[in-house]
Amino acid sequence: MHEFDSNMSILIKSAKIIDADNSLDGKVFDIYIDKGIISNIDKNIDKPAKTIISRENLHVSIGWLDSSVCFGEPGLEEREDLENGIKSAGLSGFTDIVLNSETLPILDSKADISYIKSKTQNSVVSVHPLGALSKKSDSEELADLKEMYDVGCIGFNDFKKAIKNPNLLKTALQYVQHFDGLILSFPIEESISKNAQVHEGEVSTKYGIKGFPPISEEIAVYRDLKILEYTDGKLLIPTISTTGSVKLIKEAKSKGLKVWCSVSINNLFFNDDKLKDFDTRFKVMPPIRDEKTRKELIKYVNDGSIDLVTCDHCPIDIDNKKIDFENSFFGSTGLESSFGALNSLFDLNKTIKILTSGYDTFSINKPSLSVGSEAKLTLFNPDIKYTFSKSNILSKSKNSSFIDSKLKGKAYGIVSNSKILIVE
Image (cartoon, rainbow, N blue to C red):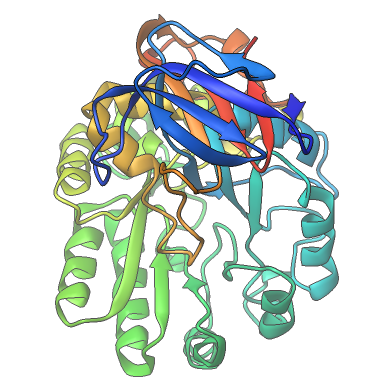
């Protein structure tokens, strides 16, 4: 990784710009960066630079953001630490990540958020932490939301856990309106899906595995939307997995409610046939659904009904993943495979739009690929076809559901925060 000093300059040669909101979209240009700022974009820049970046079939866009990333530090460093996690994110093309509170202890206080911010303040990747909604994420007492917000927390979420107490959600939505805060509520009614392992359907029935029925998600979505309608405020429903959930959210949007939803790339790329061999790499939360649902979710991403697609990066240590199916933890890594998977399902312009569409939802300043703007760019080759393997995983944990999947497109790296992180 290279850092800019006060005199450092960088020249990106012959890069095709992919940015639907930019008049330069689809055209090949040189980009000159001086002291971290884009100073010139032209057809052929003949000016000396300390660093020159030239790669095969080089494409460039504004920096990518992912809305659901877990690392582990503090407390679960055997899964992933902040330093290696940030490097993995950057080499996967992400300049910005929204970091979940999946740590030990859970990030539920001002001190916890301050720790993450201080450890990542000079990183090439901008890390935007979420704080727990409730203390210890136990759904009993609200965490200190305003204190966490004041030190850099961008939203509040009991990661992959239901908000069991509806009054807690009601109070939170009302309280955060004083500082325009964002609440996330993971959609699951646990009483209907206790001990569930996979999607409730043909595969779960045939193999005698306890399944997650779609209504266990949809009941929770319906409840949360009714509370949002009563309280107002801003709500993100992360990683929905059923068409019924999308329809409920579309209806809420039509009423003018400030609600967004995301879907995991796992639910767009795989169906529950993958679970026939009890491969724990495909044990994720929410569960991979059937093929009909998978195709419908892709349609809803295409028409904009689903706002965000996340890689849902969730590293799990080998002791808790490579064991019997029932006792293995839910989760898959996803940063390294995200671009190749999305670019296999959608055309390139849609893929880049997906990867850059989360800024407004989280009230994060969106980068601009224009002269005078801070250089926050992703460099990539969208045409490389390959089979994803363990060697492609940069994370400490190797629990990727995408191993042996055919993908299209690889990131070269990023220019961000006056630093360069790029595949040599």
